[in-house]
Length: 124
Image (cartoon, rainbow, N blue to C red):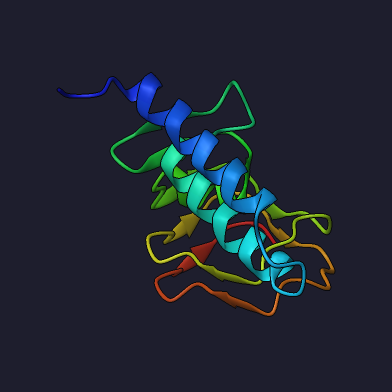
């Protein structure tokens, strides 16, 4: 049988929670970063309820991981990566244009941020 998207999301959350709770403590931080990134992509979570997505154009203010999860190529607004976000590696392959500001706050966990196709930032 085919699962509904809500059912698939619920099962994904359950798997992520089970994986995190059974992770080896020495590797838990790295594993949790990877799993959180995967969960964000699978769940397609947007924190700003006013944000809309149409053909890769995302309107509103986004956190970087949300813009990646929504497959944004253009963000008509601001993008930020907060200092509390525990992500080791970020690859934003589709993100090309930002009409607002891109803010990456000081982060001990962010080792690499790759924006290979980013061609324009109108703000700072």
